[in-house]
Length: 370
Ligand SMILES: NC(=O)CC[C@H](N)C(=O)O
Image (cartoon, rainbow, N blue to C red; front, side):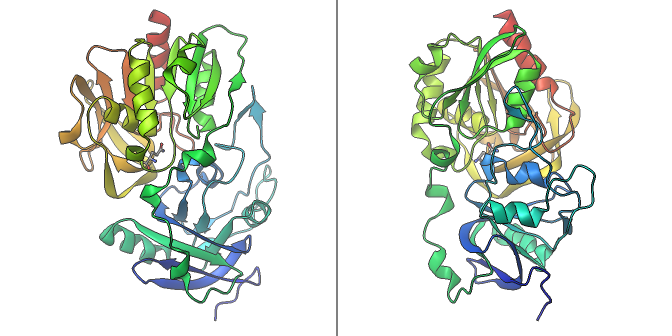
């Protein structure tokens, strides 16, 4: 039996029958979710609070997680600078080794933070084995348990990830406004669980931001007379978000400059007549290459998606903007007639390298010109 420093045992079970026993940390509890992995070597406070991870058990492949602790939340204009939302969004965390922090600006340990927020973690398991299984068999559902005896983990696997509308949990119930004193104008962000990094990039460029619930209608959006609209990131399967897809089409009729990011790129694709399909196991990392086909330049970018746009599925009247050289998936589109640009990757890069934040400059130029 492994010695468990928090005094609790834990397990991770996967729907193919794999059962790994290790140590529990964070909160005691049992949760089910889609098992996904990220190869990011740092940025766990950002990843764990990214609302796009809702409904997922996150496996971090980097062997030591927790070294620099969890910072104290820092806001600018009501926007978080060091987390992607106000709470942990993942269902559970799986790591090889969970460590106590040693850094000047650590407010608390990873263990304590997860304990306070009711999120279970499992350590001392072979994360490489999990990744190999997910890579070879494709995405799977799983169950994580910390400090709780679970006789039959399979019983917790009731819902399929792809069938749940997680935006219900991650989207605000009413508008949230971030007023800016500089005057680049007002943009509406359709907030299905927006990452604060995206809000910050818009705010830094002088925009006043109105965040509207994911289910807002086109009328509710244009009532604010926005100079631009952003359809942001969000959790789950884009194909089931019928209302959002329809709203995107309705907003297009007003010819307002529109930026789609990640889920926004997928919703744009669906709404313009293309297809979005589930990938075998998705892309989650902070060092994924994307090539801007208009310049031939390759950039290193942040990814978190399980669905993708394949070359043969792009919508009519659009041009490929970015391509992923690893698997050829379409990572950005430009509309041929309408002021619409999209990226599948995360140009705000939180966590990640800032190589492509210029996408927001391009959006600002579109907004200011209109
Ligand atoms: N980061 C995102 O917006 C993710 C989009 C979508 N939920 C996916 O997994 O593909």
